[in-house]
Image (cartoon, rainbow, N blue to C red; front, side):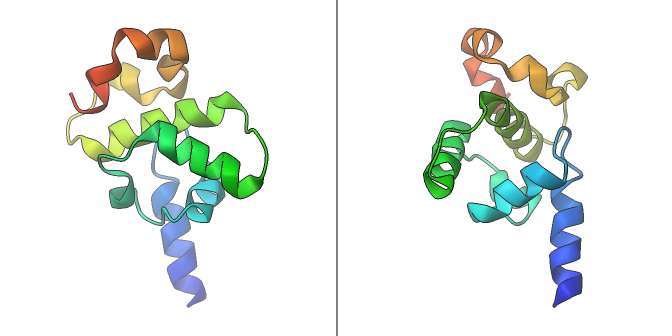
Amino acid sequence: MENMKHNSKDELQTIPGVGRSVANDLRLIGINRVTDLRNQDPEMLYHNLCNKMGKSIDRCVLYVFRCAVYFASNTKHDPEKLKWWNWKDQKFNRKRNDLKN
């Protein structure tokens, strides 16, 4: 059973920008595999995490979630879109449809 947890942890950490802490946050809201992120709404994931934690979480986590959903939802990746800081609000508002393109 411990190996299954370890494998899930390693898989989530293959997502660009996702380290141990964010992987734990994802598991807290029911995301255990990269495929669980496909076509998810990053905003909802972020709000679910805030609710689960009972407090506001740094918005950088939202930016990582946006990047993670892009990574999981696409087979070909633009290298610039694999950098979480390129998913900040002002940039994201200009290219909102990029999660699926």
